[in-house]
Amino acid sequence: MKKRLFALAILVILAAGAAVFLLRPVSGPARDLTLVGDVARGNDLIRLGGCVACHTDTANKGALLAGGAGLQTPYGTFVPPNITADPDAGIGRWTLAQFSEAMSNGRGPQGPLYPVFPYENYTLMSDQEIADLYAALQATEPVSTPAAPDAIAFPFNIRPLMAGWQALFFSPARFAPDPEKSEGYNRGKYLAYGPAHCVACHTPRNALGALEWDKAFTGSPGGPGGRAPALTAASLREKGYDAETLVQTLRDGFTPRFDVLGGTMGEVIAESTSHWADPDLEALADYLLTE
Image (tube, rainbow, N blue to C red; front, side, top):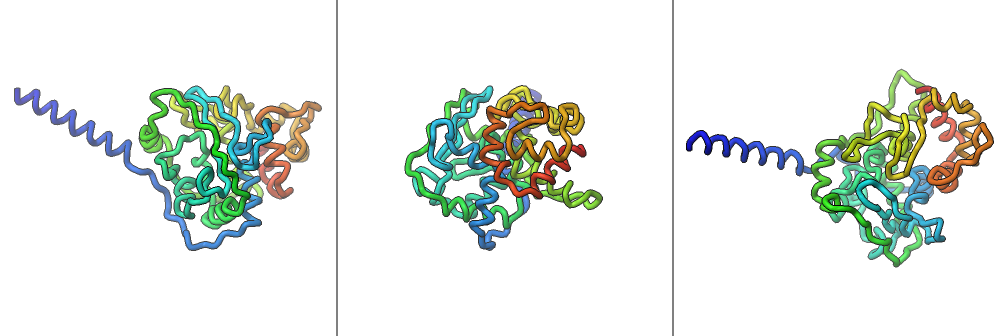
């Protein structure tokens, strides 16, 4: 009897320890929330971060940033929410601290966020960029219509489980440039892993939806953005890309083989990369064609 009680006690202790580990909040470095955001810079970040492409239902002529089309995943359909300045349907009541927590640590007022929202990438952004983006979103035209609800399958619709997912797979941090690489390379890597979150769509995920970082940019058979091809230097060069043609494709969607990129990537080009400054396009091409 004593042995059974001892074994049971050990199991209870192990279960409690696992619960504490899996349910503890995951947090990165503290941010400076005293910074004043710049709306103009924030508007650039809205395009740089793909906010319009995701949070606007362009196919149905939805209002800007008022909620996107549903993203089909193996776990259900996630609908990008209204992120306009409306206080009820959007994020108009959010404080900078709440916005920073969502962008940096994957936690919103409603609890842990699903990784279909690429906070794994946005966490790399600087404190000033977070303040700028917040200022720009708070300056948007409020839209009082909420986005449609998600349709997530059980048990993935149990939001607290996301705390365990984050404990296992999420390591919030800020981008650290490689001092041995060029400024253009570092900027391109920052964009690819950070706000532009190219790596989120073009990398395979495991059975629990976590990115397989050791296979970054090798392509995805299907994820939040659908099927996405490899973006390794070898695969890009095989398709006829050099720095100039890759920049041009990101501007207008035309490939070196005279195809036109459509679908999700077409939306990304139309609503995001075609609005980028030339140095950012060139930096991204520099990085992708180097790795």
